[in-house]
Length: 191
Image (cartoon, rainbow, N blue to C red):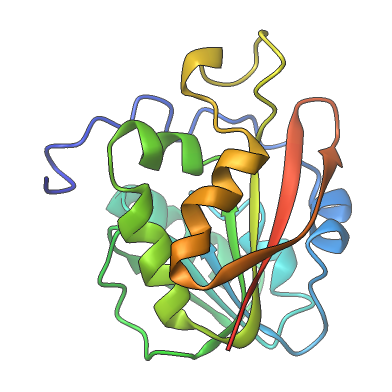
């Protein structure tokens, strides 16, 4: 199924202030100088603040108009270490293998799962992450049947997310609640 045939019902509907980067970035363990791939970056609500810590940020989104907005915002903020890329997360993302220290998927795993492409996106993240790199999955807690967020039926529990990632060489490192509505799951790429 091509990206134009998929139906991403919830894209871009997470309010910018819902996940404060001052809370999220320490929770994912972002370190100074690291190379970060923000998969499903939208307009850069996490990618742009991350660029003040990371050495390089690749911000990938399937929607070209969001990528253009992100590029403009990065330029306005004088951030020269951000590269915005329009690409389908299921790949291929035009970056070399093992070139990323840390990956971030914020509020996208439920969409990828609903569209049957989560495995492709996790395979692509495994290709891009260096051995020992970390993939942080941040998504809506499934036990909450409330707004904001997608319907409870499409939310992906952290245990299920870890199961989906395991075949691609990821092992669970930690999981915890993040704010009122989310969890963060850290997965380390073995090898």
